[in-house]
Length: 242
Length: 78
Image (cartoon, one colour):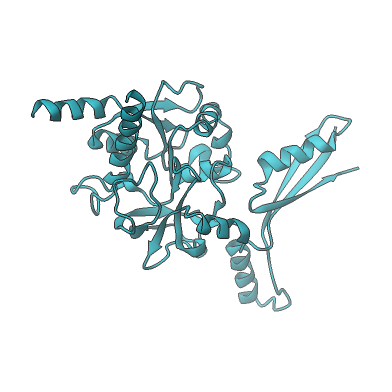
């Protein structure tokens, strides 16, 4: 490794990405692994504490937090760690919610709309093509309009919102990604993910963290989410230190 | 103690595939008179007197229902 390459690797490893574990989380291990493969440092965060451990960004992973009781993501959105994450996100902390994490972000009111029971009522698990539409802190490494293949696996992944909200999300370019080909769950307008107006708070139903290695994933396309956030955080640091 | 019932239903503009599945089952069972089914949730709260109905509505609005997709109604049982 050259001296400059070592510097870059050192800078990347200084970026701390928190991954929250709720009771019932399933994909926290894979999310942490994806962060590590992208070069960053995953930091385990626990739902029952108020400690964000000075992380630079947070991932809410997939799974069935609190058993999906009441509504998927509803009870998790009131957990102690989420109080801190909601406050920090409103001040600019980047947050990515994947699958159940997306449901938590919608329940917390950080993203518009809601995720409901799949239109066909079946759990759907398959490799899925998506088109990345919005440029955000989590998607900066993708070309606009890039098509990627990552796993989708959900029973309550049907994105819905009121007509006015949907129109605003479209008009403001806040559709993060859309399903290409078959829509796996009946989501409105084939929406697979949305972003907030700042591009820092992002939710996605499919699972990029399961597509980061050729051995285990259908592609390595998912890695782009994790390299994007590391680059975004390093870029912001470079600006602030001048 | 007073029992307060909170009924939560998906808003009419949100499609309800579970209700449709129930309707389909009823049709197969020969109940042709049922034209539509919507499925919701019922919560029964045992509340100390006097009942603060505003507080119950806040509970329903923040936790029991997701106002993005659901409506709720509160019934204090006497």
